[in-house]
Length: 170
Image (cartoon, rainbow, N blue to C red; front, side):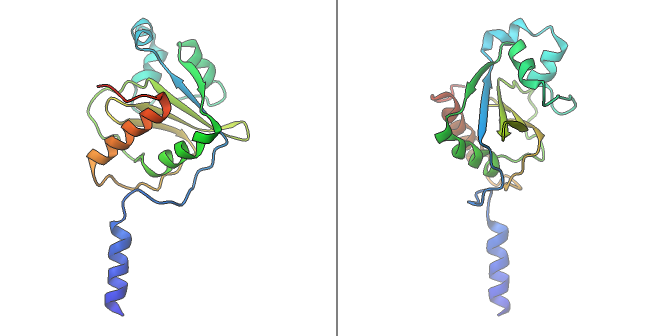
């Protein structure tokens, strides 16, 4: 019996981030993307830099954040209903939110606004160049560590294709 209990504990501890149980449920997701040339145009604006490249530390107002993104030339795209579950599974199972894993300065060209019943529940700023994610609001993840960086970045590249309809080019 002790061997069975020990084996069960080992199996549970060895599970990586993938878990089919959903803990986040969104009914609307908006993807804001910033064209490359606009990051240069807005680079002298302090608030833009806080949104575009800060790691922690800056505050956002969930009620006005979408208007702020549009004012800095982020374009709004609605995630189709048939892709919401795929996005929900990615943000629930594939992102480790507890630390920033890179030493680069992120370029948050992609921002997701996650809504439930027309209210923002979370904002995710994504840097596909380095894999950094800045999270605001109520968003939980099943991912409690990164076992394999190669898989982590492969998941990000697949997610980029989901959002943009094309492969990420480095």
